[in-house]
Image (tube, rainbow, N blue to C red; front, side):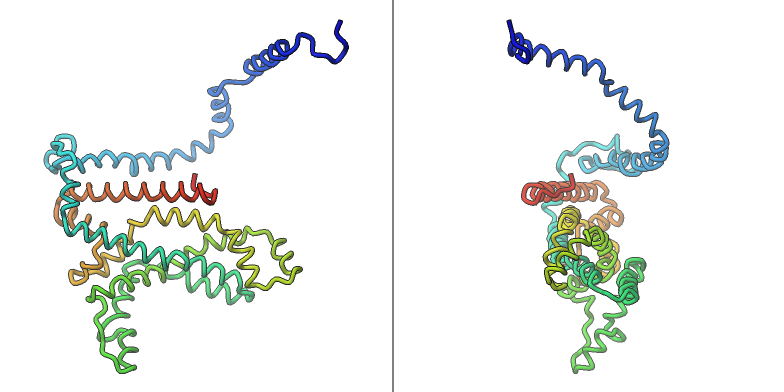
Length: 333
């Protein structure tokens, strides 16, 4: 005769009870289809609002992927994509035996590296500096000044750069001549193109990109700064010990995105600033694709170059995300 509180039947009875409980829960829980249907009934207005965006994505981002197959075909405009014969990896072999493409690839990597090295920290620096400004009117004025170049057309920005570095009336050469130097036609010198291009892109985009980091700084709890003030920390110490560690996840995410776009050098600015005299250091993959595809009519070769560019970008962003996830536990997904 068992005493109260003992487990009658032992482990077998316990396992049977747990099994019966699981079966009862499974019978009462609605299926996934039912749950999805209930969710759609409740939130159908949101999905109706999503329809235009989904249609746009399908038409302008996914449907054009059908044309990627011309990278593996001897494409003819008159035959069309479907009727053009397959040639396999012939265009990719042509690319990697093409000195112009290899030069463009080297220039792309080098310019992207310089932009990452000097351009990526600049928005962070600006955001930290804006956060330290105490006078509100000065802070707003400074932000407006540094944001403004982003909203100016690239054509106008290129015109300003060309005028500023002009050997006859440019402000840069005017200053050089004041100090007894000789005027230099910077935009025809291959060695000067990269510094001018990187500096121009930083000037145009750094201010606007700092908004992301300012938003991250705004999310830092004020109590952290209040505690630091009580402990006697200076503003410099608060920036290094509180602000930067707090926005580090945002910095890592932006770095991953930037690495994924390393081969996407600003095409518009380069096409506006470069010329045959500077192809040696200014020609990049995107300008090579433009010349081969639109100007030369070699659409299949240009498609192969573009596909190679996209695959490399995919590998870069996946690798950067995996490394970040492993060592910092911060990632895009």
